[in-house]
Length: 273
Image (cartoon, rainbow, N blue to C red; front, side):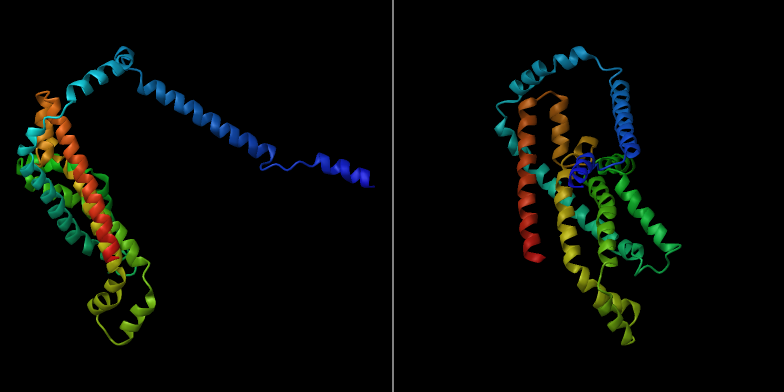
């Protein structure tokens, strides 16, 4: 009897999938592999491989021309860097001001209507998030002309979706006990929002706002490529005239600005939240 049980145990081998499921899994991965190969061939159909093979030589030549940076050129970048910071800061404030009511209209527990108002608010959020700030800037430069105003509005429009989405999710996750307690006193809808909802979402709101400002610092550095002001305008002009030492300096300034903004935003979030 023990001998038969031992032979039976040797035959029983644990498998994570049945044979049918295993074939389905293998077929799925095989199809993904074929699709990847097909997409690779399609994307590289017009690639000139001679330039690809020569790319290391060209990259080394470009790096050689970029160094050393033209340090004296930094005297012309202070104003542009200040404009970039203003674009990011004012654009963030504009986006936050517009996103705050949109978030309350999008949240299920605060929207006046889940059938009409909420879909409109969600559409605004999706529209803002789906269009890059560079595209917003390109459109606004066409309408308003070149300058930092187009950059500020572009950053603001881009920020609406980000801030409103994270904020309305925070609103939907609030503790309803305090809301019910305020409502039981006969408070109006505005008073309920002011005394029961906003205190709960305020830490999250501050964190989202600072985080978005940090992101906008990075995005505002390239808006000048389409004429929306800031340091990106100098980057574009230096690249157009092949002044590579100037380009190197501008890139270093942008890198330093981003590092400092990340450090400051992390410090502020720890202090406020």
